[in-house]
Image 1 (cartoon, rainbow, N blue to C red):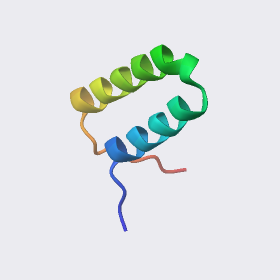
Image 2 (image 1 turned 45 degrees about the horizontal axis):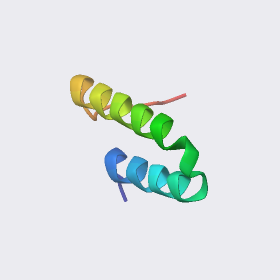
Image 3 (image 1 turned 90 degrees about the vertical axis):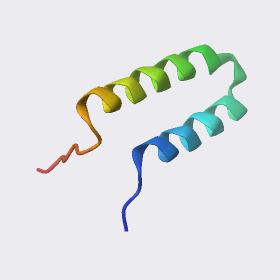
Image 4 (image 1 turned 60 degrees about the vertical axis):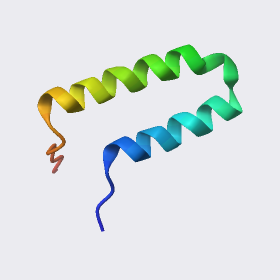
Length: 49
């Protein structure tokens, strides 16, 4: 089972906005930065110990 990064980040951001609406600007900014980095470097990031 594989989970794509974009939908997972969207779900987390949505839950955080619902719980703490004042954090909306920071959440959107971080989300856009992360999606931009994933788009630039590709989604094939393997983190292995």
